Length: 482
Image (cartoon, rainbow, N blue to C red; front, top):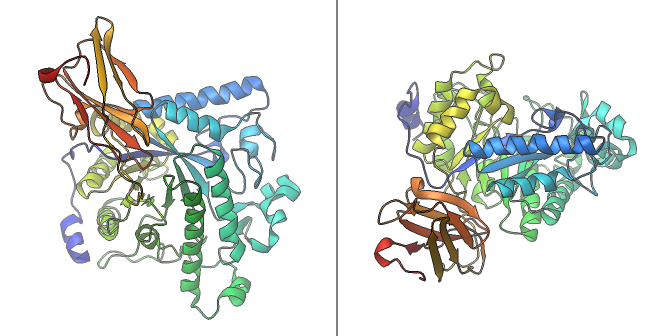
């Protein structure tokens, strides 16, 4: 099967645009570390707080206008956070001073602003890195290595949590649980959930001698990372099972026969097993960082999708930054072919790294809004929901006038929002994304431009992103009440 993938894909260019799917995660990583995407400057007074907020609103307006439906907001960088935490200190990047609040809560602000624009917000957590030596000195006794020296290891000029120490999993789970408990977050997204270094030179011999229990080193390390992911997932799901848990593993699971060999794959030096995390229910989706081209991309994308076993889904991480002349100088066609391939191989979406590069390359933004994201998309439903499906809307009232067509309906128990479809014809096809005009209505009333549409349909959506059967309003049975 692997060799068949290679024969089909290798040196093949995908040039025909795949049809726009109704369900697709369209995500972007919004980086706060070093202020790469946001904020441009720290906030030390009310004027600068207002400026930070306006910067974020402008970013989210732009993202929403391009057709995205998901933001991965970097809430924890390397031992520092961008929210009010009882566990780790405030980042100096947002406030200008280590451990000092900026005067507002960025995570709460971003979650609300995302939802106001009909987008999900997932808290992006840098997992194993705990900050540089310099950063730890800035935070003094509040730094993670100072507070928890037993589970921290120094490698060159950086501190890391030791995945082999039993407390590390509990510690990271406490961070994720704190966010899930205190914020209306849609997901927890784990990044750098792996061992550092490309050649396995992590100095954890003491931990291995203490906790290894005779398991081979590589397998022990892989077990440690899996245990962390499992513990974090359990903690989040104990708060709310509808909060998605995801990871951003390396872009290649393992080397495919016939392609160049490398140890820098998930099952190599990184000691990751994201397919296991997905198939055992600890991840709702994975977003592999597939920042490669041609034979290092297409066969591996097919491989990821083929391995999922229908227990979760794949959102391909695409390297928008690679269009930069200093980072690869990719042509627009490279990313175009990659987007097409995600649909061709039935992946469930794309995640672009990172926000700045959507702004840096207007041609990419134009391609998305005019072609691939021309029509809106719903977030793919979670596959491990354990509650009954929603009932359809029972009652609708429509009022048509010169000022607009107002549709009002009865709330559905368990619904968190509603989707609205409309057509200029005498029927509505809810499988056609061109007729999906609103994906995120939290009220039970909407007013549309007068006489723009003839037919309507409304569905209820639950916290697991599952849609109910539609309720139609068609001209052939038009009346005031349905």
